[in-house]
Structure formats: C-alpha cells, structure tokens
Length: 385
Image (tube, rainbow, N blue to C red; front, side, top):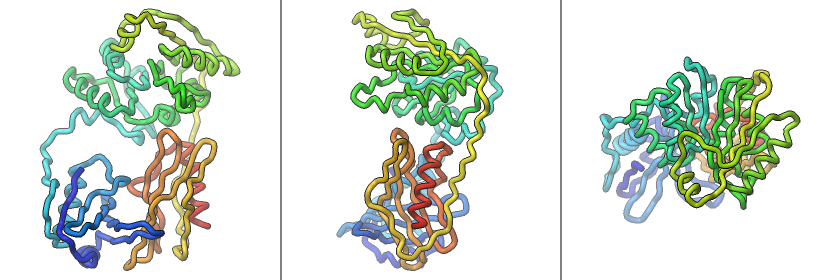
C-alpha cells in the first residue's frame, strides 16, 4: 500500500496549503486524524498516524480503492503542498505498468443496466481454479460467461489465463453472487453453475443456496434455463433438496456420480477417494416479470449540532448498521463518520461526510441492493435524530 513516513510537522500546515485538504480530528475518545482530499474527479481520505519520531500518512482503508497510481499521486501532492520532510516513500509512480486483463475484471456497478451482444449468458458462482469456466467458454464462443469469485488468488489466476488464451467471452466479478442476481434483468440467463460451494455446516446461513437465492435465480433464468448445483457434501445435498422442494412450484432432477466433460482437481481427488458426487438441476418453468428497483441513496442535509450515533451495532434480520470512528473539523463546520452496513456476507464500508451544505457517502454511493436500501433508510433515521 502506498504511504509516506515524514518528520513531525504542525497540522495547521494542512489547511493553509490547499483548499483540497481538510483536517478532521478524532472524537468520542478515539485517537488520530484524517485528511479529506477533494478534487472535482476524486475524493479520498488519508490517515495520519502520529509517532514521536515520525508521522505515517496512508490512504484510509475505506476510501482506498484499487487504483494505486491515483493514491500515490494524492500522497505526493499532499507532501509537496504541505512541504513535508519525507523520511521514506513508496509512492514512485509506474504509470506504464500494464493492468492484467483489466477489461474483463468488472465491478458490481457494471451490472446496473446489464446488456450484452452475446446470444446467451451463463453464470458460474465460485469458479475456483476456473477449469470448468475456461472449458465452457472455449466450447461456447457465442455465450458470455460471468465468473463470480471472492477468492482473490483464484481471480488473478483466471485473469492470467484469459490473457494467455486470448479469451473474449468471460467477465470476472469479485462480489457476492446473491447480490449480483438482483442486478440482472429477468429472463436473461441460460444456466447458473454452482459447483462445490463451501458447505458451511457450522454456519448454514452463509450457504449460497437459499430460498432467496433460488427465487432470484429463477427470475433471472430464461424459461427452461437451469440452476445446476454439484456437491460432495451429504449435508449440503440434503439441505439443497429441502430448499428446492419447499418451492410452491418446481421441477428439478437429481443424479449421483454423473459424468461431466471437465472436472476440477478436487473432484478428481474425491473420485479417487470414492466419494459420492450429487448433481441437482432446478429448471425455470415460466417467464418472469421484470423487476424495477427504485432505489435512492441520497442523504438529507442534517443538523450539525450535537450529532450523536450509537456505539453498538444495529442488527436486523437481514441487514445491519455499525457506526465507527467519528471525526470533526475545527476550521470548517462538519464531521465525518466511518460506517459499515448492509448484508452480513458483503457489507458496505463507507465514510459519511456532513457539512453545512450537504451530507454524502465516500468514496461512492452504496451498491444498489434492497438490503443496502434498508440500511440506508436506517442511517438517515439515526442521522436525523
């Protein structure tokens, strides 16, 4: 992570140096300072960690983002404008360093208004080694495959293979599949593959297969499309069978130790161990109505007098809100507060900025999901007293 180590300096230098930087001091017994950097095209926070012999200046974890070059430029600009005596820096820019297969690595926001020129669309949830995903993509060049994974090394390995093999029909997403399905239009998918998900026997609420997931899957699938689950877990098989059977109207098939064209190294190992492999295929029986989510994540202008937020997390059945450290500005009337909220599996982490003019989220508004909307509404209630 880019950072600076500088000799101790007077914090009053910060706001005298540039209107782009605003200093905020910790409140409620917390220690430390943060600096808000605002530019027309960007807004980030920097943490200042004070030590006796040096100060450490680094991007705040919540607004850090993935673009290291931007963060390096902000740190360099901060050091230059505040005339800091730099002891150590790793901010030397390397703008010519290529981004590996970056055009295929997508963010969840890319799916807000999803459209494609491909004839068919299929999704694989938790692609792991990506052996199955790459094989399918090679066999079906007319089909767009969306690979979803939360394990970063697996994502990086797939991106390398996409570049090496010249694959043109795979999009990669690091996100929770349960939330992605909300973004997709109805009747758009041919197949959803869920091969060997983590069983989560001790935490069954974390399983990707659930009534809510299956409901959204059937909505996103075309009539005749299928959700294909493969598992070596007896417990997961029984659980999924119960979920499928609980549907008001359903058609599904079950097979045991059936053959497919390509298998993962783990399945090869399980077959050598003579473990049973279950395949459950759930089919969409009808076309679904299009769902339009009318979501709004604007924050109202609030009173800055004696603003209070709860120290304890607010936990509901399907979402939570937790307010973290709070900071205030001495020179400009306003405050910032760290906030985590949304789903338990893929929570949002934002900084809420409030001043005399407006109140807003940084580094961006929450992802457009229903649970985030519920959490946002609760945040507004708390901020408005």
